[in-house]
Length: 211
View 1 (cartoon, rainbow, N blue to C red):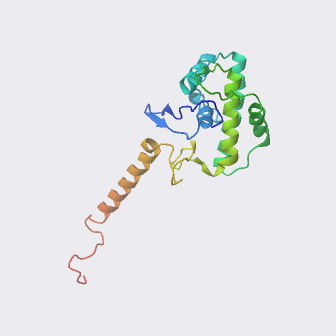
View 2: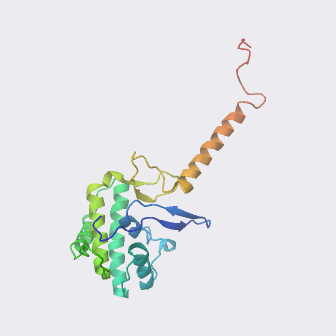
View 3: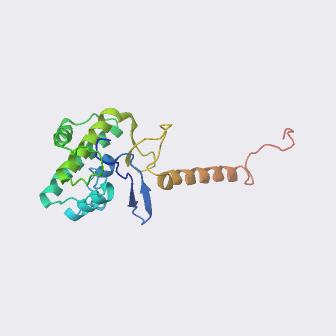
């Protein structure tokens, strides 16, 4: 990690049908990207409606308080949208857009919070937090593009970083799309089993003798 502290990764989402579910994005820079619409423009995905929302997010993730102005919020969203666009393109096999790379690089070039020894109480600025997030995004987008994937669920385009040991994660969440897939498979098996036992269907003679 390039940030000064190990942040909490993952967040709660609420689906359109009101079900609350946990999403582990795999990386804090993707969590940051998912405070917004990930570039699809849907307002229901927006978590940062005002500066106080950004302040609360930083406090929850890093345990520090920062002051965020309206201008800071707009700046944060520019970086957030660039990261979102880049990881989405990578997950769908498209090349990274140079204009979005430029935005991330610009933020990553700013001063981060310097690591320190001993009992210190860092008081970062929002610019330093954004620099750390941008540097983490650079690391992911440069070193771990093979792990950036789109959920395999039907009609689900949620993007995550696969950090599993076996590198075979398929779903945004096992409790959401993974469970839906299991339910569909179970219903398909049950339907197939019923079709072989209904009257009038061709089925093998249990005696093994020709009909």
